[in-house]
Length: 116
Image (tube, rainbow, N blue to C red):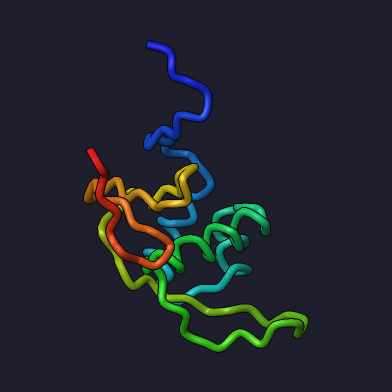
């Protein structure tokens, strides 16, 4: 059955760059954007956006203070909510879907419930 355009599927291929990044985060335990870029081959823009989005939702904890504007200085992260091997998915409605638990989280880290 065909999907409507922009329907926001929760399934992604196993070779997705963000899935590789999540697997690398689980192995590395402490990491920053350049570490993910070098380990899993994700683009710089994709890595920084994904890190910021899942950090806002509470999946990551920032370890070091980021001094913005200094060359070569990046925020260091650690996984705070390791729910399983499948990567959190950023949805079109700006929520984060966790395929391991089936729950959705808002940008503030609180669980989002459907109004149905």
